[in-house]
Image (tube, rainbow, N blue to C red):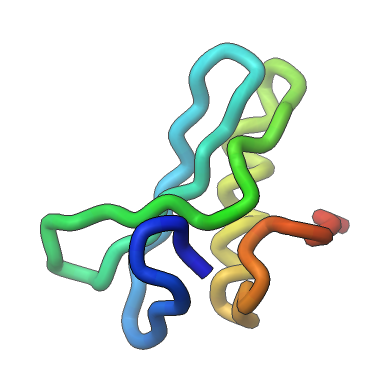
Length: 75
């Protein structure tokens, strides 16, 4: 689920934008120019968690996030 256009499916690219202690998860259709913000963010993180969080979000997007990050627990 994205803030801008709702649910998107297909071949997607995931990016994690970390600024200070906040991480915004972005997705785009692979090869497109437009990026969309995954709903429910930004997430508060601890310094150095960016790479770990990105890997976890890639796995989560592969399994689907129909509600965005709302109620999502990273394990």
